Image (cartoon, rainbow, N blue to C red):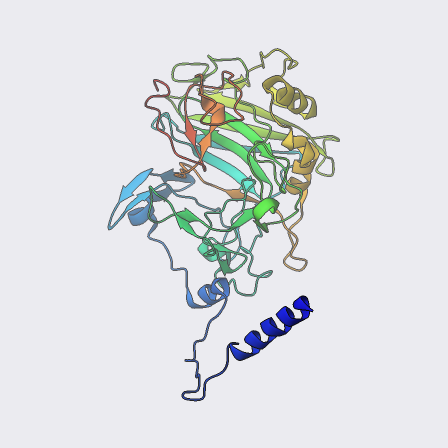
Length: 406
């Protein structure tokens, strides 16, 4: 009987004191319109042209390209990234099919010191910068859109024709840069990442076959098999691989003087229809052909080229997570290099990204160190001899001071 009474009493109070609608003044909501930010910003924002020399310190002379690191005009600009356009075109990037081909360029790194990275690499971008695939992208290759690489960079301000403003966090050391929620992924072939002290050639395969946006765990992350791309790559760095006298000022490849860099993409059947079986590096200086250095690391069979065996042995020897093989390996990199481009089918191809003196204020590339870095800085770092300098790229920026006498 007590329980029934208590229940009735609680019910009565709930009815007597429940929240009611008043009769003195009706509730009228003030009108407020809203839209999803990325689309709205893409529709209302625009990309203007660039003052290449005044703002970015970029000049050309015939077939020569010069990029300055720091340019001061109305504002200070640090670094630049340039793309090669197809001859006579203002709307498409130049594309290359590299399997069974040789790629050659001349370079002068004598003024590129420790801590800086001059890079020339290929990335599997859409030739039109993504205009055909994404209706909100009205700018296209003419204004440098559609960038992607194996790091799935989050610092791209427009991805897939949308503004990358969700969770955008400005950089602490550069007001013009930052990172957003979305990244942009694709296969990347680093033909040249170097300065006057050290150099590397590195393929980075991905499981996606064209520029692909990512968020959260779908993006790649360092030393992780998650995501779609291989961030670490399979690099050939002479210093890291045991020859400390091959590349640098006054060494076999003397970086105080200009030289020619030759990269050969060897096919399994010596035809462009074959699979990528090896990547070879040569240098030419003062009329002399210089073969690449030989590896001298326990556990790695002596070689001067990148092939499947080298990549497998390298990961074991240095205790690295083998994301290279899990994301497609050398054959996967070759498929990206062989992809055909057609305006009709919108198939992807490999684009040349002439990004000399590329410098991002937010990534520490660890293959250039020859010091015992504390594990507290990078928990997964193996304390091995890697090279004579710090090379910055896209995580957190450190200076050489306090780490190594550059």
